Image 1: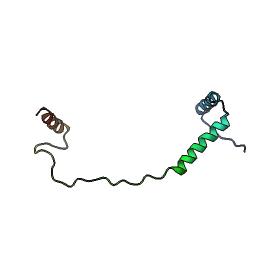
Image 2: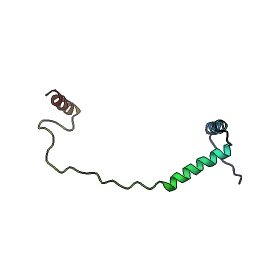
Image 3: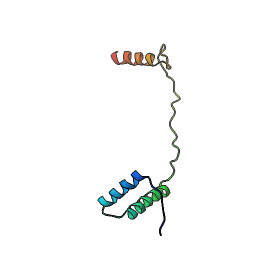
Image 4: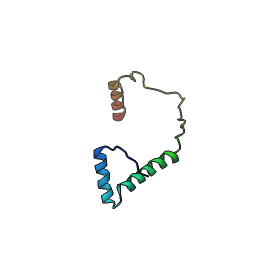
Length: 83
C-alpha cells in the first residue's frame, strides 16, 4: 500500500544512508522499524510495583549530627573513617 509520511530531513538522510549500508530499501527499513516498535509495545508487560523493605528497627544518627546539613554529615563521615 502506498502512503505519504512527513519525515525530518536529517532523519530521512540517516535512514537512506543506513538502507544503503545494509543493502536494503528505505521501505524495508521503515517496515522493520515499525515492526520492532509495535512488537515492543505489545510484548512488554507493565512493570509491577515492587514493595521495598522498610527498616523499623531502632537506631539513627549520632547525637549532634544534623541530617539537614551536608557539612555536618561530611564531618561525621570523616570522623568515622579516621577513627
